[in-house]
Length: 206
Image 1 (cartoon, rainbow, N blue to C red):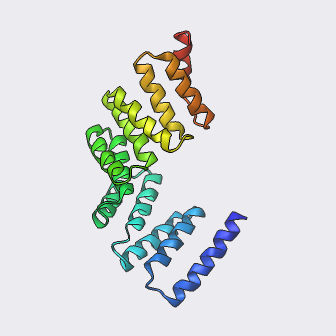
Image 2: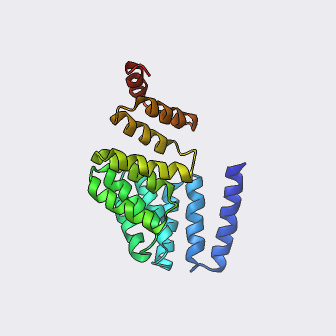
Image 3: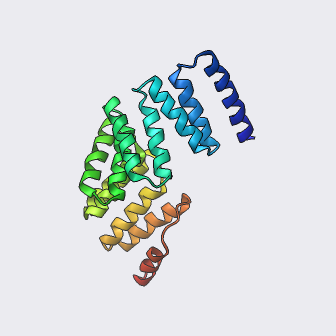
C-alpha cells in the first residue's frame, strides 16, 4: 500500500515537472520518493538535477550524502555535506553528518568540533547530541559522554543509542548498577546491547 501511494505521488510529481521542468523542489521531492522505493540511482539523478536548478538547495546535497553513506562512501558523504554547509552556513544537519563521518574515520577531535557546531545551531538535534556523547567516550571523557547522552534522552526518551553510550560510560566508572539501568533502558527501546556488556555486568555480580 505504501509503495502504491509512493508511485502515485511520483506520477503526480512527474506531471508537475512536465509543466514546470525548472522547479528544483519538484526534482528534490522526486528524489525523496525514489529513496522510499530504494531506487537510489534515480534518486541521485533527481537530486543532482535539483542542485543544477538551484545550487543552494542544501537538502539535496544532504540526501546525496546519505546515499553515499549507504553505499559505504564516507568521503563522498563528507563532501556532499560540506557543500551543504557552505550554501547554508547555520544548517545543523550537515555539520552533524560531517561529525559522524569524522568519528567513523577515528578523527575524534574533528568529530567533536563538527558536532558541537551542529548542536549550537540546533540544540534539539538529538542524533548530534548522541553522536557527540560517543565522541567524548572515544576521547576518554566519560563525564562529557554522560552529560551529552543525557541531553539526547531528555529530548527523545526512546533514543536507545544514547542510553547505550551512558551505560558504557558508567561501566568505565565501574558504576555497574547505573550501567545496568542504562542498558536495560536501551534494550527497552529495541536497541540491541552487545552481549559482552551483559557478561561484564554478570561478572561484576550485577
